[in-house]
Image 1 (cartoon, rainbow, N blue to C red):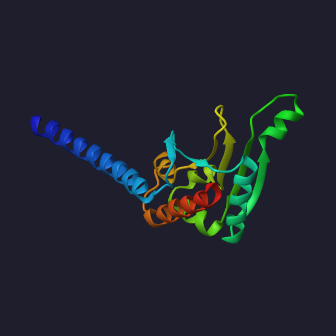
Image 2: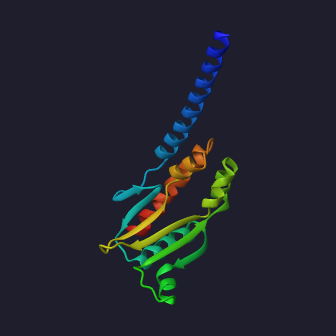
Image 3: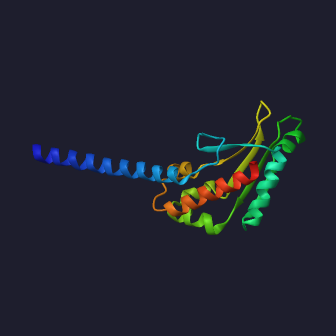
Length: 171
């Protein structure tokens, strides 16, 4: 009886350690895949990069490089203009929604729930101090949020591409 209880506890502990190891490994791989541009902040799954340009120019530059790289631009949302239509004032804030099925589909195959965060989005906004930022979801955050496993190469590719696009848009 005592041997049975001890065996069950050992199996449970082993199972827990395997799960924990997999979670840590997935997060570490995804974080290592990210090499965000300098002069950025990481906060709640967002990579935020200071821009040397206005909000409109930052989004224009991002859209230019994305088009050049064959990405699809799904929508550009001017939140400031939307706020103005309802009589509210909002500092410059624009969102660009973009993607490519060749890039996104492999992630969805690894974890179908990641589709809720795809296509990718990038937000340019001016903060209270007048600094313009470009923000996007960190691939490591998406990997953790959606328990993505077995997609190391796709995550690395996305992290590098987003970093390059952001650098072009903000410098």
